[in-house]
Image (cartoon, rainbow, N blue to C red; front, side):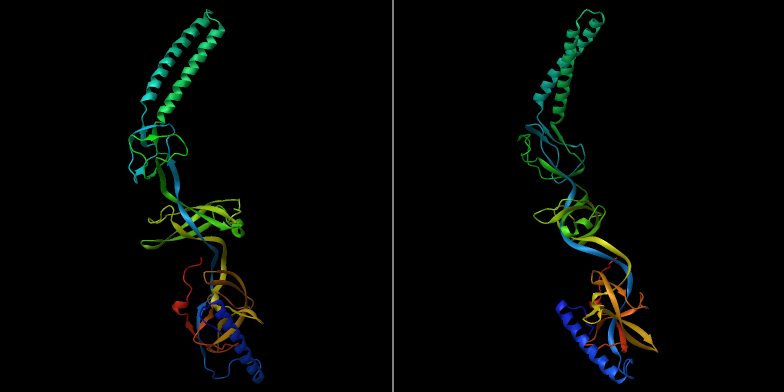
Length: 380
């Protein structure tokens, strides 16, 4: 019995009926005319057919993940002080090196002036000492002390310049500024536990993070392709991507591995933190014969079969062909015919009109498979 795509329980019941009807039909016929097909003048059975395709089948794994920015940084002060100026707008683009905020540096500038004066004196003392030591008017110990004073003054000056530079907080990369948590006059601390001043997100490229069950972990590696889908105000948007990181550690709590990838040409509505569906490509079978899953019959005695439509003397006849089954994906199944003469392009029975009784060499009236039962999408 050939039916449209059904649930597993309905399909099992239909297959049982097919075996019974086919066995009874063939038995009666064999008793009358062993080896003959349909009785002369028998009415052709209407069936719906599809062509056997030679195509690439991709084994996929359906997962869920979250989008993330290419880079994200929480901006904190490295030196405590009072905020003097806030120089960025929330939600607006910023450039790498752009000054976001200035902290009051008047005390540091005073210390810098002192350090510059000490360094200038140390430089002059070193110059005089070098002249005296060439004339042997000074001991080596005194000369070494002068050089030490010069190096200490130089280091102190460099340290204060670095600290003064850190009083201007700058953007670490191009991105979008987040909400700010300070205003001019606020006091910021240098603690790592302090509230960030703002966040900078690089949205030039999106990443995705998801978990892969441990049974598939060895099949995911750098360069593995995936497809991302998400609901947006414009409907459903999608994009392709590629894995750049697959952890070698399996999480004991979830029994899965962490995987990250880059999303290519992300639609405008994709945002960091968004929930998305991920279709991960695990393997590809090149140039195999494929038919819809509904075209495969599974019987206890004959195993897996397809019903190929063959032409003889102007009639379309049913030919039950045993097949081996391979990869299944997107409603399609890979087949390996165990009988010669089955090639791509040949018609195979995929559905019928009402209850069908099919038997070997039975007459058929092939019709295109109805659109509502066709397999959508491209498995390539």
